[in-house]
Image (cartoon, rainbow, N blue to C red; front, side, top):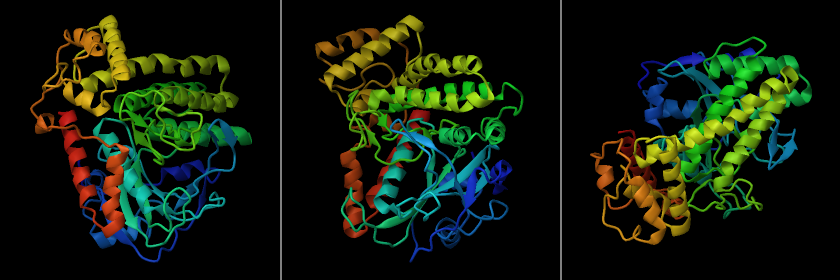
Length: 459
């Protein structure tokens, strides 16, 4: 997908100032470009910016011609670890610009670490450089594995010393720009419902339908159509997390997008093995957002969206739309598993049996998550390995034997000795040379390897 020119938009202004506050970006001491996503830039017509222009727009936030004249900090509420918080909003980021991609989709540039806003509370509005590097790695890996995600568009080091309690301080600072298909969150709807602003709530429903979901706005059934679409899409996101072995870490309702695009990566991790209780956030003491609890957490968030829509609809109309999540999730999980395994469906019962045996074998054997998909791509073990000789894998071996491959395996990635993964030790190993001697070569090599894997999966 290649855009020939930049196509600016400013559709967010249609919503009115109930939804945002105009803010000014931080004035950083210095700016050093560390990462530019030219592949994503080509899709929105900005690949030909030179580095100086890039920094002027994505480090100093000079407006992009024809888009928003100034940054907007978006307003929202949300449940955070199941407690409702009306005192949140964009606290260290803002919506910088909007545009159309080559397919005509509305896209947003959102920031992280761009300075304080009215919603910063006691925060400094800044982002650590390590946090920015981690978000590069998360988004690149998820995109390669077929998860719908925001993409890290730019990272610029801003040369401030930051104090943080959860990592060695002072530490280096950065500002990140992410490209995504809209920044409207479930918490955006919750805010308007809580404030009793029903006219604004209807505007937000229509805006989301028309500009983000490609559906007709208006009509008494608009909230139901929105929730129906949200249930289907977010069920797909939940399933893709499980197939990727990904743990987001903080699936609060302000971190779930109405477009079901994963975003806002803090304490994320990829699970080394199939461990249902594996958590990413050290502060998730109850395991609320643990690996296999994520679908339930996302469904809980979807229920909060349904409750927010209740003032302009009815429970009788909204409940079936919300509950369709379960059926959508089951189908999406099968599709996600089979896509990564690379086999064709044989029908509901055979598919169900295979998924059950696969999950059971992974859970009881402790085989590496990435290793398993890599070895069994195409539905048959393609390299000598004693990992799968045990009795715990016998039912899976029998079940998968009758499934036909659905993919070509001629990409050289599949002939590698080891799979491409993104475990925490690898992330730390990539960060260490940056912190110690400003050596970015390991990061660039990893991004290249991940994109190569993504090409292999798409093939």
